[in-house]
Amino acid sequence: VINALSADGDELGQPIAFAPADREVDDIPTPVGIGISGRAIAERRVVRTGDYVVDASFRHTPELDAFARERGLRSIMAAPLVGGEGPLGVLTVRSTRPHAFTNVDADLLGALASHAAVAITNARLYEQLEGRVEAQRTLAEIVAQLTSLTDPRAVLQRTVEETVRLLHADAALINPLSDSGEHLELALAHAPAADELDDVVVPVGGGISGRAISQRAVVRTGDYLADPRFE
Picture (cartoon, helix red, strand yellow):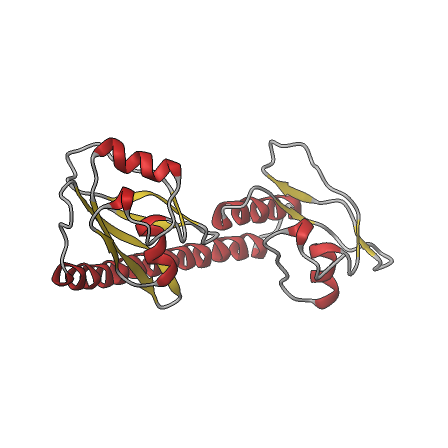
């Protein structure tokens, strides 16, 4: 089973690949640092046990123990998938036989995990490249619209709609700067267009949008309400 690491780095989610492939996927999320798979990703090394439920060398949870007990799992071994930018996930093998895996098996699993990490990294790089090509194509189309500008609002609306699509965002807005230069007015264009405009006047230097206009730079946050860098 190969489980990818969640975006927040706290959990191994549902499998992205598993074998035997003709069986229905049977797995549960695992917190990082818990169980064999969670310990492998936390410590970035191959970890194994010959008798999962009774092994006291790692942290257990009732849910993971029940999962192993109900399926008769005894031996579990996991190797981390680590890319150039950090951990990606875990490759885990299981057996109903006690003490089924050896040191040689551990070396082999580690090697297989390294190959899997390279494959995942390459796939992600390809997706990023495709996204950049698509973004460049969209920008070229918007520029072409600007050169034959007849309806400015149509161009602004296309811009926010493509922004939502390309960045997989929930919403996008274009706010004009007030004549006084002191605040950003309500949006001229927003997406999704089907949603009612939900916006407020933002003072220059305040929040993300106000900070972006005052610094003339891209500004972002991953947790707006908890971010102490701005008011």
